[in-house]
Length: 288
Image (cartoon, rainbow, N blue to C red; front, side):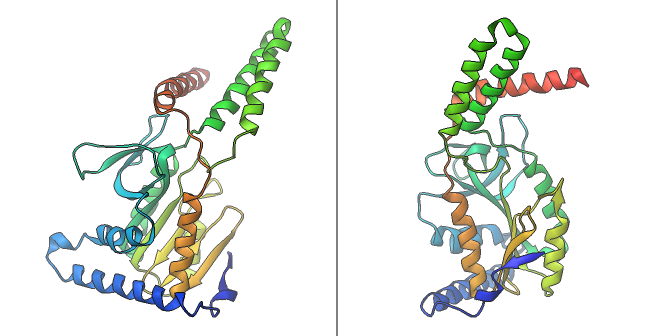
């Protein structure tokens, strides 16, 4: 897998690089302290990564929490370590500070945090397969679906073809007027406190973590040794080592936050669109 970023490995920003180094060292120091505590404190990697890194780097308009994600097709991800929400969108706790239920369209990206990538990679892939089965459904998707539906009706009713074709074209124009927005699949990043010493091993794991040509894992940040690598469908990703790995990781997450999201109304999406999705699924099952 080709990667971008090796050429910049030595061109540090002389002001930013020491700050990144300090953040990294503090993260490792706190991680070491948590691992020497009681057994109940040894599972604190997720909380540590949120409180000492994500919540300190990103502004408070973003919420990072754990929980399950569901979509309009009534699929569910299982519990995700860290779910990053787009601002001004909803999620649902059971009680205060409990794991939340997230709607797929509100999720910018997900993160799994592991003590050891080598020992827990199978768990990562199991979580990734469930997460990647979910699909986000935005306003543009609804317009495109309606456009195709009326185009189909136009072919089925030739005597009214002009009428239904005009409606189809209207919805298609509405879709073109909206930004493409994020991909249907939720991005997944993995953070490992202990990673692979050999860069080629990390490359091999990411390259093999695919389903039908699409990545199950969008990127990996390993803290020891400090590396960040992404995998993209076209086979070209990013790679960085040392303090630049943190910066490249932050840049990848920020890119997802900055995607143009135009959601449908909440009730419409999870009542009306879910009904449509259920009917489509039942129709597909009858055809089989």
